[in-house]
Image (cartoon, rainbow, N blue to C red; front, top):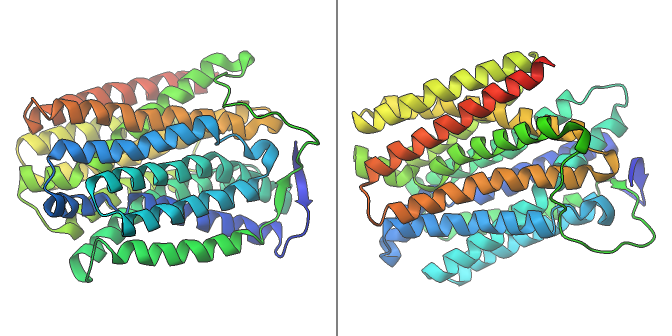
Length: 403
């Protein structure tokens, strides 16, 4: 049962706790994408083929989906702060695994564990931010909390590759130092989380059950549209998180790790920026911008890859990133608005589950296709698929927004 006042003792106010949770959210998400520009280095060290990168990445997505289904909704009764702390500690464990298990199998397990931490975190932190802000500013609408949650989520995913690229290009031991630094930072964040107010009153008794795969019966059409939008948005993000460095090297001859990290940063950064810059624009107009951006941007990505023109490819990714950021935020806001407050974490866990299926499933298919089909052909087909999904989702959600 959700409460608007703190439960138990806490060292800081709801307002301060809001920003601690936002910062922790951003850090955990950032660490989850730090390996993106490092994949070519792991590939060089261990000598595995390109398709193995998609397997390692998919292990992360599988971890997210697994924990969203089995753990992501538990904060509705176990408490937001407790589950947030658990998410941070699991992320710390993944950093330890990266450091001590230095084989391809170790990479797969470390990414799987890292995905579990993100699955526990996303719905928990999103719900916690909304409740902390409501307690601190009862008269404020939900726009700021939703925008901060979206910016922390996608902003963290944007910062990670840039940080990884900086470590790889300018600092020693790029396969060790990033994990050491984030391990320390995450431990500090975990300590800070223990002072954040709780916003959930635990029930006297509870029986564990996995995530219910159900939608609000009175708003089934709107929820399905939101889920489709989340799936489509993360399908595009999966492309740039898993294969962008490889595409830059094989198609454009760019092997600079900072450029690889900056490319992914640009896509995710545009997604986060779009959420903030368009926060006060009417939902229908946001969705029109998102649909057009996805369409134009993805056409440019395919054109840039085939030409090949690096600037067109990167610019297309940034434009498409802005579109999917707005599309994803609209999906989350729709799902949260349809949910029962007492089951908000459960509803958000479900929508994130759908989103991360969009992150995992297409990339697994891409990995399988790369074993028999040329890379450029796979890329164009994948972009066409994501183009169809994102534009269709945007059109459907725009129609729902009219009502």
